[in-house]
Length: 228
Image (tube, rainbow, N blue to C red):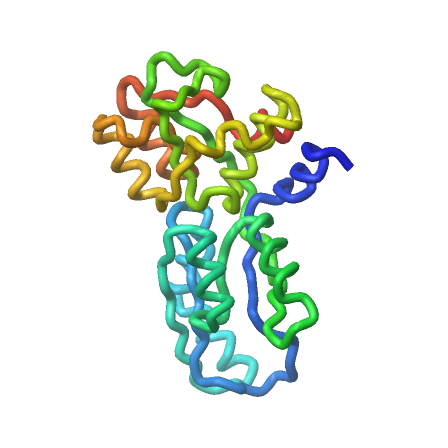
């Protein structure tokens, strides 16, 4: 199987919810559920669950009694994976690449990570403030591209897929040295500051829309163009 075909299968569904645990009968084994989400509209459904206390209400409906649900915000799949593997959270969120990585490391162990369900499908865009960059071919070693987690996040793999299409499959990692790990809010702040530390951001809603609303910042690539 070619590199591009393999990656397409990995990221065709952009976001999944990840779970540590094995299916069990309907009785409460814990009085607290610890969950985490990342930043952006990708996690709107979870924000609604948190705000309306839907998990707590459903637990009571199922006869599980009073369950405390703790929600955390984490900056990217790297931090999410670490929290899941360390037992710091019970449920996490991230892209398919993160799920595959975690599943491969935990398959067959008592801490096997499983996918619970899909969260969304939405555009993620690569935006830049560098006027000389019209496509990914124009990036130089003076550019820095923010992704949530280098080499692991959905955006990082999409960038590798784009590089493979542009420069040949053997050069899929050509742009990896330009990538840096930053949570979306921090990446947007750095890009909008104009300081030059970050010149591009493989973003997500709502951050990408706020970014292109600033003069001089524009979209040069989207996940739909990469995946076809």
